[in-house]
Length: 232
Image 1 (cartoon, rainbow, N blue to C red):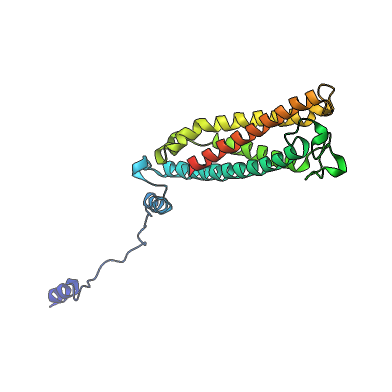
Image 2 (spheres, rainbow, N blue to C red):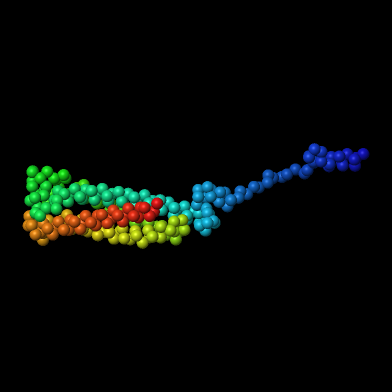
């Protein structure tokens, strides 16, 4: 009878059986690698098509994508700032040169009768144009600095146009430096004894420099606009 009772106790009834007590709860180790993969897949950084198959690669890709976004935004800002600066420059050209043969026939040279738009004539500093140029220069330099941190090999895997931009950004920087130099020269030439607005011959030379400065401005806006289109 005792053996029959022991057998009954040891036999599972409705899925239950007597077992020795468990001394400790089972340790569950989370699958961290799987969790990281899930997160980066959802964020769009983990993609076998681009050779991104580890958490470290996903982190590097996320950083590069952020830098690409910043470069896009800054390049658009540069383009807009340069376009506004160019508009101020055209107004300044109208006031001081106006495609006239001598200074006295321009809005600035005619004094009270000329009615210049900005009234920054001769030695006066063209404040709106100068502020615009400063913002443009700051945006251009910021764009270039951020772009130097981009891994272009990684960026080109997503969009081949970034490989083109890797070269054209240097053209934009060079044009910006030339434009800044031309603007500084033109703004200060009348403050020297080299050229004078009142001399018709000097006025023609200065007008020629102003036209060249405007042409450089158009080239700058065009180059940065092309880069902005390239990056989107």
